[in-house]
Image (cartoon, rainbow, N blue to C red; front, side):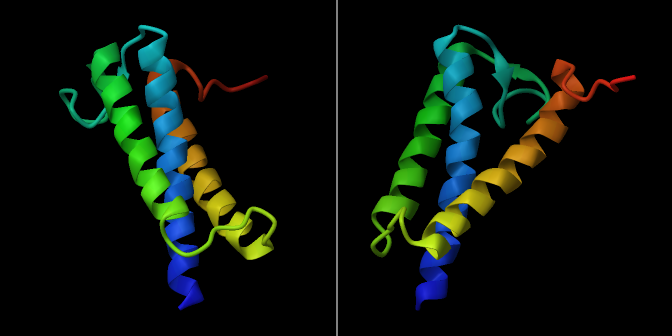
Length: 108
């Protein structure tokens, strides 16, 4: 069932993409949007909450990529599935959080 492994790697990439901004913002001591803010996904959560949420996403990434099948970065389908998940959530995050952080500014 190689397609189930690829699906796992796709979601692993998505969780990794979600982990990065939360963990980095938290470590920098900056508040950032999280599912625990009010309103969820729009309000700001503390840096501590973001470190914890980022770490949780890293654990899920690890379980989906490193514990399912035999992920091989040299295998184009494994790396591609992971990369597509990373890209998909990365673009979603850029568009969603750009509304709040000035990332959707129009360039003349």
